[in-house]
Length: 236
Image 1 (spheres, rainbow, N blue to C red):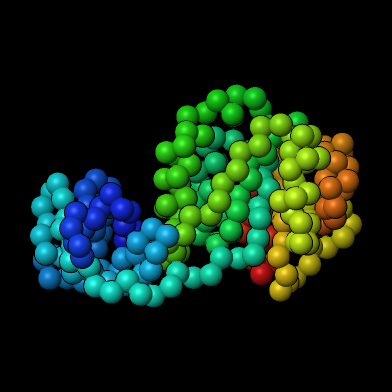
Image 2: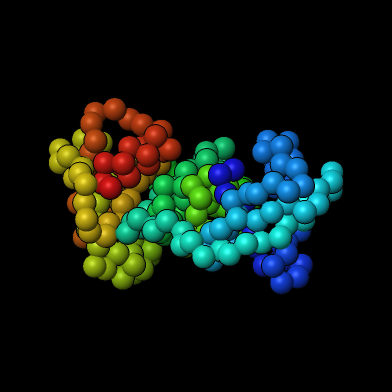
């Protein structure tokens, strides 16, 4: 946790915050903070600054806030369209995409996405929010990326995606595409990454029809989280 992220529910009085649960345990056991110590904090959807510990016990941590006047790091001009990963992978991918600075994440159905994935408790609203919060804490950010769930591939790609991707360079990661993924772009991008088994050809053609160009980063088939980091690092 590189940033202690505060929500409106943590503010108990003007300039004061009280934390319990996971964050309190982390500050006490990992940061080993004691009364009088200063911590880096940020307000969700707000600024970043510091806070001083004024009370700590096993149940709660009380802080006096300083000026939270530093802006969070800028988001990448990137919309990530991601075939829904396996539930075991979903949490890591969401946190990683958030920490990388992705501005918008779309979780999309695909032929190789098992129907059971959409029934996983990891798709609960609170878990989806929690994983993005963990990504913000890692990166020292305060602004959650937008999250969209698209359970039907074709209606989303044909009806919603063109408007969502308007004004951006549209790329679909597809091993064997023959066209290398571009590097070091200065323009907004909408990037589609398939399931670990890859997109099927009709899906690639549908994405082509929506204006997407298939690209690759080499012959190897990568895990979703590895492909995400490699592609984002290459693009920006």
